[in-house]
Image (tube, rainbow, N blue to C red; front, side, top):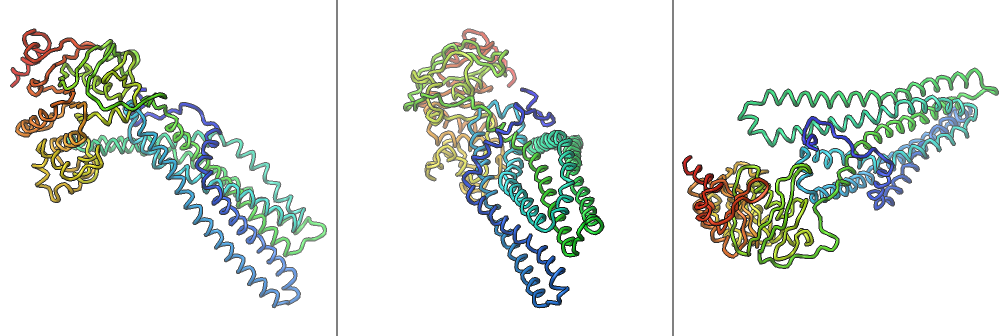
Length: 591
């Protein structure tokens, strides 16, 4: 599992491709089926109209010209022009309809993918580079939608074209028609031989493209670190290696796929040449010039849909590799979801109880083992201890971001595994150490968790944490546009906005994970006043490495060795002279 989170590790499909994937795709086609059938009817009509032109040419050469019937010749020429223009207009109408169908399919697949991604647990995103997830929603969906719309229509159309062409050929000359059909067994043999290599090659293209996109996304997100450590040259080498791998995989796939149309082209040329030889030298009775020209035209037209079918087949194999990835994502199990009999958690008081809670991010390595504690409503609790001991894990479990391996967590006597996620998390305020800021205005970011918040409420929340001090100096105040991830805001300013966002949600249980780690000392003093005001009447869990910031908490838990080694007030723990005492005094000595 850990190797998934690498940009240069090829993804392996959990299950091999099955035609069930195509069957599942029908759910995206079904609502557009009437429009697709209408588009197919337009295409078939255009094809039949175009196939009448060689018969007009035959008539002109064999009848009108020898008889010097110029009136009929002009009528045939006019009819041919009208037919050609009409067929072109029908094809254009079909293209317009199918472009809308394709975009509708793209919308539905992307919507399903995005909705499913939002329901997946943290571990899914921890285990995969975000670029490999992004490429499925953007690039893969585009390829698949074209196959499910135009690809299917084109496939059916070319089959009909073949039927129409064969009908017109046999209506013109039976013997020469069999000459044209003689090349099909050779073509089928070629397709059968290269099919396995084609699918493998397009799967490789999918993998290498995914790797490249993952590295690009990672590089953009880490650009500041790259420039700080002057890693530009090394990163460029890595990018070139991944880009060359993607290019190499694509060229190989294209070469294998091109064997199909090359075979079709060569076979068609040989067959057409042989057709003229048979028509001129071996036909008994003799075939007229008009028939030979008409059959040559039909032979050329016969191999055109064959060639297009071969191209559709190549595109189909390419899209199948993407379809596998898309359905693999949609099939990713949702581990954190509502129980079948889940009910809405009533308005919280804030009593929190951990009963024999065990958890680990890996099955064979527990972070917490048989953890027990009870926190009454309204109490503020600080979690301290060494890095990796499980402080953040405790609050993540309380928010039910991960499933427990053992035990249960109760809020006001309700098992959080049995209540709806929305009713649980909507009453909790979580301030993470990594303050993520979304693109949009400052006001949009503050009201992110409470969309109905008015400007006076937004301003009041910002004022509590003194975020209004820097907001007032921005170009447009609360309507100032912020770029992705906070743009030019300092880390401290981003944390202040995140704090205001948490405050305005008015949570019943508050979780602060290193909430003041990026705020200067002066601002921290102001924010601390706001925190003290906010903590009144709320159950709160505060994680902080600077112990001076948590002395005011009602209780302090020292997390160590998969559990709680010490529990009490600051004064009580200092008197014990245990783990907390050593940590606190060591920080004092560093000052």
